[in-house]
Image 1 (tube, rainbow, N blue to C red):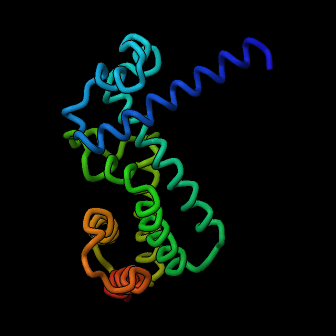
Image 2: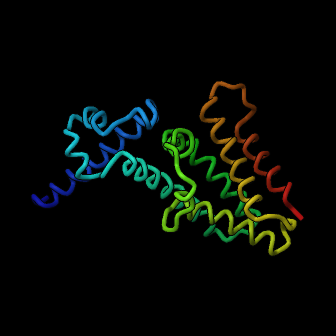
Image 3: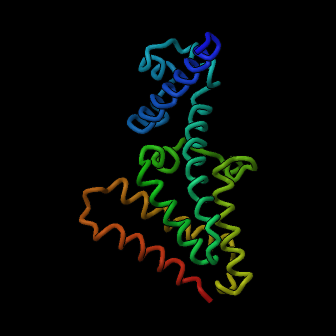
Length: 201
């Protein structure tokens, strides 16, 4: 490995170390209680070094979200590429969302349970992976209504109902692991089934 390649690898390793430290601290201490200086101290670098990679902690936070959403979108696309019927595809997608959150609880906490205050206009911004994921669900709902698989209803309302159901079960399983849950597979399956059935024509 040449000097140039070694420097590039070191840069990538340091960038990932910054992201890993920030993720852990945001989850444990809360976004508002973490500073760039604290992150620098954790990885034993100067704050100036971190600013070479990220402009501020909001930028760091957004990179962590995009990292999680990128993995989630990849998993969702693999389901959609199976070319099942719309209802089956939607059910599989909802399950992927839940399973992704349970497999990556820290990322899920960051994305939905310990986020900084976000203004309305910052949501559903074109070009963001999180936006693509949400609008993908909306598009599926809209198509189900158009084809008569779902009854006529407000597309945004139906989309948000499905998302809040998915979020609710994911966040509860993450934050309340010691609750005497029934078999989790049965719980997830029934929740998804009930949500979809309630919309069918």
